[in-house]
Image (cartoon, rainbow, N blue to C red):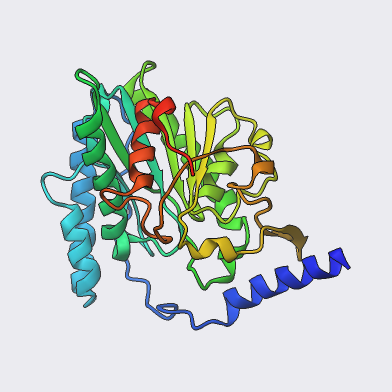
Length: 318
């Protein structure tokens, strides 16, 4: 009976991903030039890397405009602005962007944000708004002399919320090595003393889990997570502290917390990260929904700030 229920729940999960209307699925893929091939960044080459990727974004904006995609052209052009600090940019397909807020080369505390589904260059603004909100709060709350930076990492092709891929680990499995590489680059730029935290939203928590083993970070925070693909925090094989939170109005609470290998792929993500048996440090997220974890003034943003700053005893719990 238990096995039958498990299979039924997984089937419903898959069906909901593939039968709902796929908004934007038919959107044509606007071409863009290949990004500049640069060596991994260092503190000394950081400004040159930012400038090169801004140039890539400007070239992508021209290509999008030539193909009549004014929305993509505007998004690319915004990323090409003189104040944008792009650690990576690729305008092809749905697009990849890594942006730095703050002075990464001299930061003592660095937060790397990993987004969930439906995030690409066309929707990058809302992801950047989350990074800005965290950076603003970190700047305000950091002790005197503590320097902070936030890295908004859109470094993988995220699944659509109503795409079958959102119910499997496939995209996360492909993204995990890229996240590992990003953390390595951040460490190379910021130096050995910087404390790096991963903040992983929604499907991004599956990506973080896949990259977690022996990753050089001090904290991993999972917010609005459907699961990680493993059943316990210990199974992540990391020395980092594992945190988890879910807002009271987050629909992800209704996702079945199951996992099975079906048709050669892993469907579902296992134990709920906020459940006691998972073993994470669960913190308060307030009454917000799935997109509210970085809302200014929210309990979740306050607690994420405390985690990044190392003020762990001040983190609040429900």
